[in-house]
View (tube, rainbow, N blue to C red):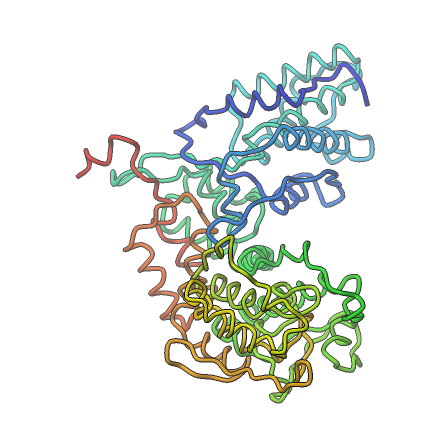
Length: 535
C-alpha cells in the first residue's frame, strides 16, 4: 500500500546497516550474528503471535566449520537481502496493526485519527524490548514515537503511524542481528556478556527463538549474573517442551539436513522416491534424535546403533515395512537382520550423500567423517580423472572395485583411504536408502578397515562410531560453536563442560546444562591492547 508512511529504499537500508557500529546502552558490541530463517520466523511468532504470516525469501547461508549457523556471524547481506527484510517488516507491521489484531496491542488510542504519544510509546516500548531483546533507549523510543506521530499527522491514521514505526524496528540491525554486548565482570576478572546478551544466547541455543518475557525480566533484574538466578533460568528452559525446537535446530544444522533442498533422484531408476520423501526422511531423523536424546535422556552414542525409529506411510514403502499403524507417524524398531544401525542407515543420511542414479561411497564417507568425527576432507584436485569410477560400462562391476582402482593413484589415496571405508560399509543400501544384497549381479562386499579396526556393514560401522571418542567429542565441539560462534572457549572451560558430558554417560541435557552454566560460555575476549596489560 503506497502512503506517506516512512519507507527505506534498499540503498538507504544498506546505508543504515553499514553505518551501524553503535554500542548498546551499557557496553560495546563485540560480535553480530544474523538471525537464521527459522530464528526469524520463531521470533516473529513468539513476539506477535502464530497467526502472523512471514512472507518473503531469505538469503542462503554457507556452511562454515560444519555449521550453516556459523556463517551468520559474518556481516554480509546483499542489497536484495536488505530489500527482502524491508518488505517482510512492512508486511508484518501491516498485519499487526490491522483491525482484526488491534485488540491484542497493549493499548488503544483515544482517537484513531490523531496522534496519541502515550499509547504509541507504550506499544513501541513493549515490542521494542521484544524485538531488540533489550529495552529501547530513551533516544530510540523518542525517535520511533516521533516517527509515528509525524505519519499519523500526515495520514490522519494512528495505526498507519504505528505501522511505520513497527516496520522500522524490524528493519534495523538491532532485530535482524543478534548483538553480543560486553560488560565488565563483577569479580574484575575481565569482560563478559551483559545480561541481555546472556538471555539471547541462552534462548537461541536452547529454544531457537528470542528470549521470552520471564528471561528478559531476569536479565533486567541482573539475575543472570548470579549463580542462583542463572541456574533457575537455565533449568526452566531445559525443562520446557520448547527445548525440542532448539535440539532439532542444532541437529538439523549439524547433520546438514538442509541439503535435502538440492537432493534429486532418477525417477526411472527409483520410482519410490516421490514428492515429500525428503521431508519425511528429515523428520524421521529429527524425531529419532529427540526421542533418544531428550525424552529418554539417553546416551547420544546410541544414535549410531539404535534400530528404533519413526515411520510414516511414505517411509514405510521405501523401507518395505507394512504400515498398519494409526496416525501419521508411528514408532518402529527394525529387526536385527535388517542391517540398519542408527541414523547412519536412515534414508536421510543415505540419500543426501549419494548421486541421483547410484550410491557414492566417497561422498558418504566424506560426509560421515566430517559430520560425526569432525574430520573434514579437502576438495580433490581439479585435474582428478573420475572417468573410471563413473563409467557404467566398466568391466569392474561394483563401485568398490572401481574405487579401489581409482584410489591406486597416489594423489588420491590419502583422502580415499580415510573416507572410502566409511562409505563402503554402507554399500548394502542404494542411493535412496533401500536395502540390497547385490550390485550388477555381484554380491555386495561391505567390509571395512579403519585404523587397524575391521568390521562389516552398517552395524559394524555404527558400533565403530559409537565406541570412537571422536564422535561425542565432535558433537560437543559443534554444539559449543553453534551456541556462540564468536566465543573464544578456553581449554579449561571446554574441558570442564566435556568432563560433565562424559561423566553423565554422554547425555545431551547434561552437556547443554554445563555449557549454559559455564562462565566460559559468556566470556568475552580482551579488547585490543588489554591482553598484554592483563599478563
